[in-house]
Image (cartoon, rainbow, N blue to C red):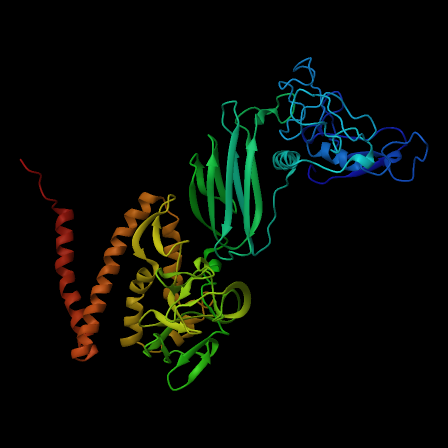
Length: 551
């Protein structure tokens, strides 16, 4: 295969050589071979201790490094392609196609001079310390950054194998197509994890000058394809493209296209790697955090039970835990530990910060002041714990380690819902969306079945997520990955429904203060049931007998 580098050692004074990546199926004269040849063929006289004569050259083993450079697509720094120009110092001679190696008219013949400049009228001096010169081994010490970039590009184009990822990883694929026009092309991007923000971060800038000239015989023309693929841990990510001078790109995850062919620059995308249900499970508090429970005092989160009344505000107000959105004592989770409170919270989960409201924990920075006591954060580090817990209270808030935290998570890298690839912010916070969405669940748990969250069919299935939370999160994740027009179209009726939930909860809370809550619930239910036939009739009439146009 083209990605395993085989090294062969042969007879003395026969010479060391290799093949360019795209020439491994041709002989030295460019003729097609029946069996492809690939590898490094090293003359044993280039190895230490073999040739000890006074005329011995390159005997420190560095010929292997130089030959590896050829195998990865590098030319000699003084390469004369002949067909370009009679003047080797002419800038029209591309030499090694690497911008940061100065023009060099001749090889440094098996010695190590202190200084050499074969093109004195041009900037820079000869690359006498470069592995791709002919200097003696004791002189060779470096590749340039441009040579490393070229080797990476050649590897990605010709040698890189198809990736095989582990069960807890997803295959990320970024395919870049260069412009059809013959001109310089720049494309820079960054892939950052928001599930594990301090663990995984990849960024690259491709600077490709005349990409069709990767090799001197014009095999590749403008419009070439550059492919990046690598395995990333399951989680949520942001891909940002901040420079794209005329190219196009496409992004896939595990073979599924997430971003179709695009030519946009200065844009960010929210991506999910791995099965959504696995991504959604890490959205909780650690079991080693503590809460204050009425009549029990301070207890660990892992000992909290449905029905416990926990402290939810600095003013001493307690609120009932009516359910757990997620509760799994055996699952391992990754958390951010915020000092000095040592609150252990997953990156998606939200905390209340002075002047910013409820924001994802991943957005908290050292110096931010956390509610309610406005104590500044002094440290942030990632830890791993066994056991994940996410209690639900009627207020949607809870004090954990003395810090005011939300019951809910942010489904995007933002405290507010954003529409489309351009991340257009809406006025709807994830705190409001999460609390409104759970209104029917709160109502059911309060008036229909108080032990609902303790039922194994509800709480212990779906990786420890309650069914209501699980399917709601699945739908929400699907929704935010839709095209902007589709997301906007679906989002409008959802907002209307959630707003209705809010109105009903306000009415219910007011009613419960003056009369029995159950009477209020039944009255609201009967009102809704009574209005449904009328609403259904109107909808049916509008469909069957649409209004006539004006004459």
